[in-house]
Length: 178
Image (cartoon, rainbow, N blue to C red):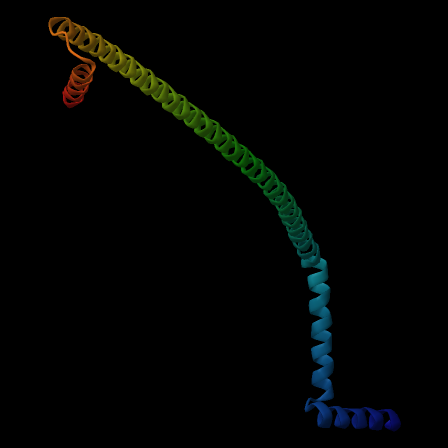
């Protein structure tokens, strides 16, 4: 047995030099660790694994909830984008309709303005025509009055042709001045 003792002693020296620990201390430490592992396995391992399983289940639920919320967020985002695009199209339609109504109103206003201008022009032409007719009538009356005056003077004075022409010229000049 001396060989075994020498081997134990040699291993003990190598371990002590390499690790700085006595072989006996190391064996005691390993035995204590094994006993601790056995005690944990017997008394606490079920609770630890149950706790870890619960924690894993909770994390899986939270992960699934996060995925669902992410999907809901994407769905809501797509829905909002669709609503935004619909509103954008509606507002464009409203603007286009407003432009069309404005253009139609502009056309109506221009048409009415032209009609009013034409009516005013027609009314002015009628007034001018009425005034012209009035002036012609007045002129005809004056010419008739002038002719009757001249005829009266001719009858009163049996005038010769030269005096008659002078009288007509005088009366015409008088008419023009008045």
